[in-house]
Length: 202
Image (cartoon, rainbow, N blue to C red):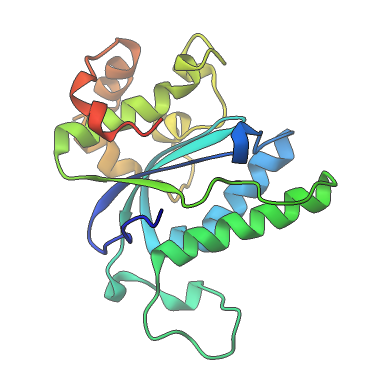
């Protein structure tokens, strides 16, 4: 089944999981490598507001940049000639293909790693946007990996609280919650996220 294309200037919750529920990440280096490839293929064409990587799936909350917002010098192409337009959906496919090739080689496996096509949900309301940030950061707790959001290393939660350089849209995320302390407090309680059921893909 073909999914709707990612439309420039919109915000999306994007999700994908391992084919047949298989793991995507087998060791710490796999998480690091996925993030390196994400920076290569996705960061030039999006703004990222939240992300989490779990053993067999991941979630990201992104804004799809308009063509004029994209610095094409940051992108690499499989052909000498640059495409007239940059397709964000294709960039995600490039990410998945590159990561699959590296995992198959490293772990001596064959075949598809990710489900196809990847899932996406348009986010058009700021309260949904705020709750989706919490939902993504809370995913490791939901799935029983940790008891507290702050204990999970493979999410953007720590990047929001950190002062280290990041491609995450940290300033905008903090503004959505008013302050860093409000962000922390919001994540420490259990907000009602029933109103984002339509945006939850799992």
